[in-house]
Amino acid sequence: MDAERDSRMKRHISKIFAFAVLTAGFLLQAACSSSTGLPKVLASAPLSMDKAGVSTSIDFTVSEATVATKHRLMVALDFPQTKSMKLENAMQQEDMPVALEVVYVTDGNTTPIPTQDDKGVSTRTWKTGSGVANLHLYATNGDTSYVLIAGFYPTKPGSYRATVKTVKDQPLFSGVNGVVKVQPFYNTGE
Image 1 (cartoon, rainbow, N blue to C red):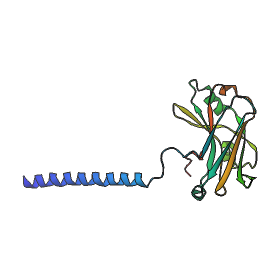
Image 2: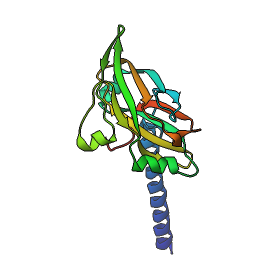
Image 3: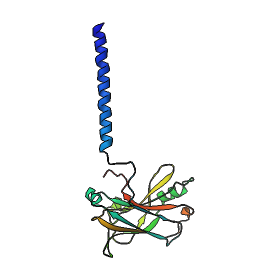
Image 4: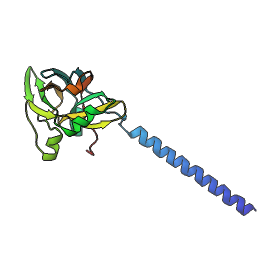
């Protein structure tokens, strides 16, 4: 009987020890993680996408730490997910172009930064200067639709500007409040 009780006690202690080790591991992983779940937005500005010729410019600063990661940043468009999903479906089935320019700004001078929209990713092409990028819906979560305009690699720390301009009327965006953001590129396994 004592042997059986000792055996149960050892199993019980082993389970408690295993639980403690797992808990410590999860806590350590959480403490060491730099991820907060959502990418940090460097800058944002509203943009009405329904009429051609509307533009917004976003000034933002890239830190030495951001450059050191060698990860892409992206210019993105977020908007409230539509109930009918017509806008999101159209975005996946047809080109919805915008003009995009990302520049490095120093002493009043600008240096164009190459950008790459979703089509450029598949063909491995980059655009420098003001170019056309096609909107790419990459996610919805029931509340928000997330759209990639284009990605880019910041070349050095400092001041940058992203300018987005609508190039044609997009009536499906009528009444939709869009926000253009500059933030780390969505998770592509980089």
